[in-house]
Length: 97
Image 1 (cartoon, rainbow, N blue to C red):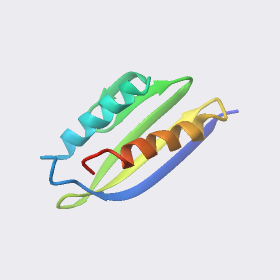
Image 2: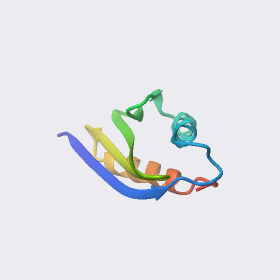
Image 3: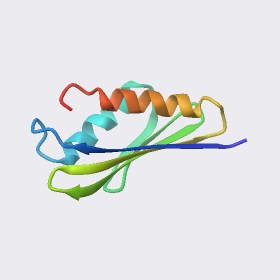
């Protein structure tokens, strides 16, 4: 059975960051430190793989320094949702946000 989960939130970019690219770089490093492989950070997404789960994070511009942050995870195990929740929690609690 395949699973697909998503989490969205609006966010304001911290004054500690020059632009969304810096945030995406920090998120990519966080994924690597959390054991994700094949981590990419491109214009469309920050994404990676772990234990049969593909996780993708999109940043959609609203206005000024406001963005929608969209987390998505797909996988073949029931642990897919927990992995998504763990990453959402880590990203939401980055020290500069």
